[in-house]
Amino acid sequence: MQSEDLYKKLAEKIFMGSSELIPKIFAAIADPEEAELLLALPGTAQTLSRALGKEEDKVEEMLKVLYRKGLVFKKSTPEGILFRMCRDLMQFHDATILWPEAPREFLDLWQEFMEKEWPAFSEMAEKVLPRPVTRIVPVSESIDARQQILAFDDVRQMIDEAGDIAVTNCTCRLTAQKCDRPVEICIQIGKAAQYAIDRGTGRKIDREEALALIRKAEEVGLIHTTMNRAGDTHFICNCCEDCCMIFPVLINKKLRMCDPSRYVASIDAGLCQGCETCLERCYFGALTFNREKNIVEVNTEECMGCGLCKVVCENRAISLIEHRPADFIPQV
Ligand code: SF4
Ligand code: SF4
Image 1 (cartoon, rainbow, N blue to C red):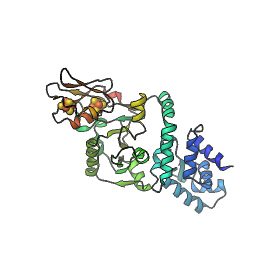
Image 2 (spheres, protein in one colour):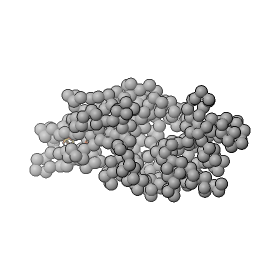
Image 3 (cartoon, rainbow, N blue to C red):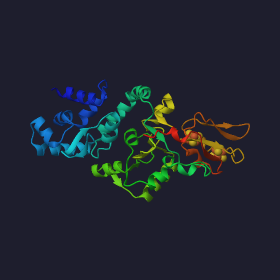
Image 4 (cartoon, helix red, strand yellow):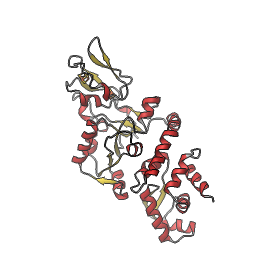
């Protein structure tokens, strides 16, 4: 098979057959021999060696390299370790960008994809997905103490209850480089942490360091996001409004690519001094300044419940109040 065909077939395997850039990204990370092995997946080193007519040792060595590159994932089975290819665009994106040896040209290709093809793809994804894959978790200190705080709303509790924790680079800031906010700040939990540590893409950290990273994220204006499922916290991403693959299309194109939290901001008109500091913290245009009253007001339709505005209000005029029921967060 011609090598262009190999990369086109790999793109088809992750449902991106119509993309111009995805085959190029595959070509930048896998040579033709590796591409053939990827196309033969899933399988164990033994079954793959038979299927491809290669020495088993050689196949094992290649799988090790592809695992580090983020192109294959492994699972223990009674028949041995089963290898499979990344299953979709998101997994291909998240895993390969963290390839520790990724050259800058590879990351730049991903950024080209984000600029040229991602907006149209995200429009289509928004239409077909029943719910966004991710949701916002509020800044935990921002929730009014009188409100009901459930485990899946509480970023601190998520960390307290985590088994293993690791920190990885933010794939979006690593590729986009549009702001100077921290890159090593995405928190992996449980199996995701074990995967990151095993692959060499994450650094094991303890709860104190994880909480310090959460505080840092809040100070510099990063939005906590996680899986949009109540019982499934395997990461806490700390997203910015400019580099992130989700928030620019949500803000500029109004695509619902991330769900809000269950909370909205509420301003205490008696405490608000009209300093306007909170205005620039809100990436969603949910805050407006009322000149007549000299206070800031919240549009609850636009508020995503991130709580970043509260972090900067020295007058303690902002609280987060419960706005959506507990079952707003999908259970499975
Ligand atoms: S930061 Fe606080 S005091 Fe200043 S405008 Fe916003 S809510 Fe009012
Ligand atoms: S007003 Fe803006 S910054 Fe404050 S919680 Fe809502 S979305 Fe976040």
